Image 1 (tube, rainbow, N blue to C red):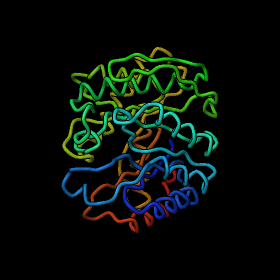
Image 2: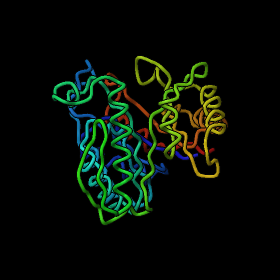
Image 3: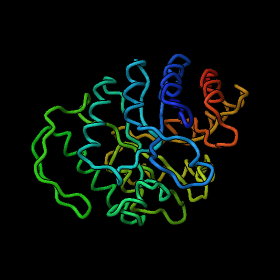
Image 4: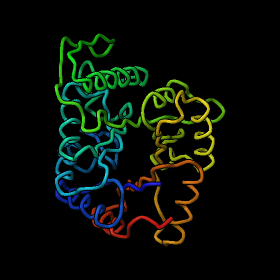
Amino acid sequence: MRFGFIGSYGSPEQQVHLARECEAHGWDGFFTWDGVSLDAGDFDAGATWDPFALLGAAAVVTERIALGAMVFAPPRRRPWELAQQALTVDHLSGGRLVLPVGTGVPFDRAFTSVPGQPIALRDRARALDEVLDWLERSWSTETFAFEGEHVATGDFQFPQAPVNGRIPVWPVGVWDAERPPRRSLDRALRWDGIVPQVRGESPEDAEPSPDDITALAGWIAEHRDDASEPFDIIYQGRLDADPAVAADQARAAEEAGVTWWIESWWDPASVTPEFLLDRARQGPPAV
């Protein structure tokens, strides 16, 4: 199992420094996040930064760790610009970019204050699928046109493919063992991994339990067309400050089927850039 760390708060300089410290202290990935202008109470108080600019800077000061955002919101992005941004960071980092993706949060004004943006969850989900399809077509290096409900373009060509031929895509997937939401889960199965969530009112409420992960991993193994291909299950949680307890948490997640633990601290009342730096310097547990 690999370990990533989210730079949930801080200036651009602080986040780039945090990425460097994550690599120096044994983490396997650094992740920022993707928001523009939030209308969400306490969460709208802080500044937001362009994730690809931050990841480009992080790519320059690191050599080993994976880079991404938890999570990118493709439905509010122009796919040709997303393709260029992702390709740039992918090459700048030597192929270390990953793309966790979701439908976007409905309280981002980049959705609600812009005419023509998809607002309803169903529309954002359909737009997500079309943007991802467009993105994958761009990696072929061939000229292509695209016709969809939310995305329609004439000819485009990106003559340079990603470093490794493609960039791993990890869609958010909602898990409900009694009623598996097939559209969400089937989307993840078409790509390279899943960021599982359960239904909840906050980021912490939406975190699945080890039992949820075990059930999800079994469902994935049963429904994947090609089980020989790598597939990541990404878990967002918070490791205990006690190394022994943190190791137990990590082992339980790994036994359930998790391949990436992403250290995820979001409470604006208690989490500061200094807190994140201190946690990153503790490093991941030895499992």
